[in-house]
Amino acid sequence: MLSEADFRARARSFREAFAAAFAPETEVDVFYAGKAFLSTHVARWASEEGLCVDTASGGELALALAGGVPPQHIGLHGNNKSDAEIQRALDAGIGRIIADSLDELERVSALAVAAGTRAPVMLRLTPGVHASTHEYIATAHEDQKFGLSLTPALDLEDAEARTASGVAGTPETSEQAQASPYLGSPAWTAATRALELPGVELRGLHAHIGSQIFEPAGFELAASKLISFLASLRTAYGVELPELDLGGGHGIAYTEADAPRHPEAIAKALAATVKQACAAEDLRVPRISIEPGRAIVGPAGVTLYRVGVQKNVQVEAPDGSTTSRRYVAVDGGMSDNARGVLYDAEYSAVLAGRRVTGEHSLSRIVGKHCESGDIVVRNVYLPTATTRDDLLAVPATGAYCHSLSSNYNYLTRPAVVAVHNGDSQVLIRRETEQDMLGRDTGFAAA
Image (cartoon, rainbow, N blue to C red; front, side):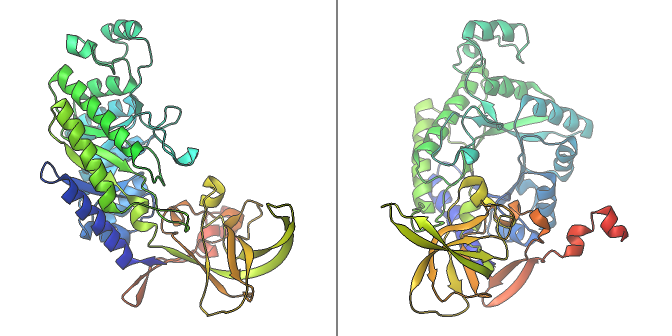
């Protein structure tokens, strides 16, 4: 279940907060990160609230276009874009392609030249910032698949020899280029190559340090590093790139232990860092982009489960004593919310649909899949009177639940229903067994 009003209000708050924080020096584009959750309706909501839409595949791009998002307000991410996905982006005339590698740059150039157009490109850089989050959703450290590192891969003498011979890309001929602290890094090689490739319009730089992050320091450090890189490019080549995407990953409250920052606080802190760093480098403040996907749609979503089997087990308490924990199984699990098994994510839950008074007992809400790690909510106190067929509501499930859903154990995926002003609307219909099993050629024949 998704609240349209909540989604729109959060989208508006990010747009307004960042516009105010960066005024009058520059403008800000808020890109809704479609990977968190995307449907044609959600794409339309985002666009109507003045947001752009960031996509991470050809399928997401198709949804954004079908939702009526203007092509110039769409970006295409991805570390392994196919030629077909790049071609679709070029044919649609989208506003930006975020290039993740030198190989991709070359393919974008060739496809754009063949199409008789110029591709607007942002380079995704890896600033080496270690975000305080789960290792699988920290995306700015060196040892991972995304982006182009700022760290020189070779010692300077070897790098100079290789670039002079053309091995590492565009030969560096100016003293300014040779003096860059980024010489020899994958990021520098890609940037210099992008500046000379036909069919490529290098618009700016992009970084994303991770997801579900609460501390501001990582975002501010990443912004400072990107601005330093912009300054080095200007010194070496006289080019001042006009755009800077600071990514997203701002945390939300899954449980009472989480304390997310308000959009105004996030915007003011980042604006202060960017303005100060640009002033120190004597740069104009570039046009800024951010990508708060989870922070917009996550709190807007609630998942409803139906209670099935319950059982009590004996567990050892921290003080060494023995206590009882109730296992409450529901009609879903890791197929509709994989975040628990992937990231050890924590959630809360409440009994929905009826009022119950009296005692509560320590409970663990689990799914119906054949995995012991199929845990929806690890620890929660539920009314002792909870019974079979009761409804449980798990909040903050708008992001990375339906988009990560699967048919594990051949369970059908649930519907997504929007609520607004007392009315409901099905955004994505419930999957049927025929939908799911129809791809099996033997089942279809039978």
